[in-house]
Length: 103
Image (cartoon, rainbow, N blue to C red; front, side, top):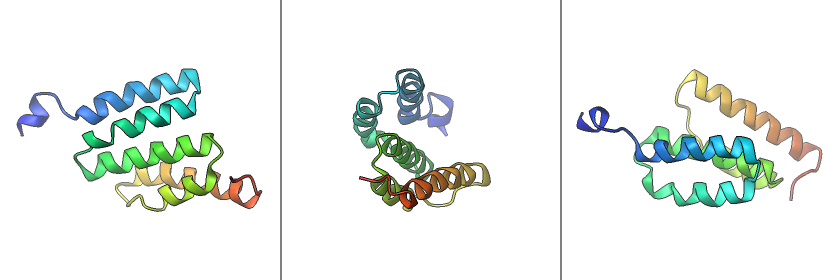
């Protein structure tokens, strides 16, 4: 209860600005390294799922499609909106894998 009243998630407070910076810089390798440093702050199933989805997206952007597929397959179903985001990413990864664009 106090966590919700006095500050929320340290993980999300650091991940959200990181992903905003990535949207401008498009430096997927550096963003991926910074995101990995935040893994220790994960406390909930939802934070883990969001971390894995962002990891998968960054791997996809680095053209590491097989690794992205491995990560996204581990993400559990949470809610319809989040599941739709995961499905969209899965589709992109599968298209890239079928085209032979993976490394």
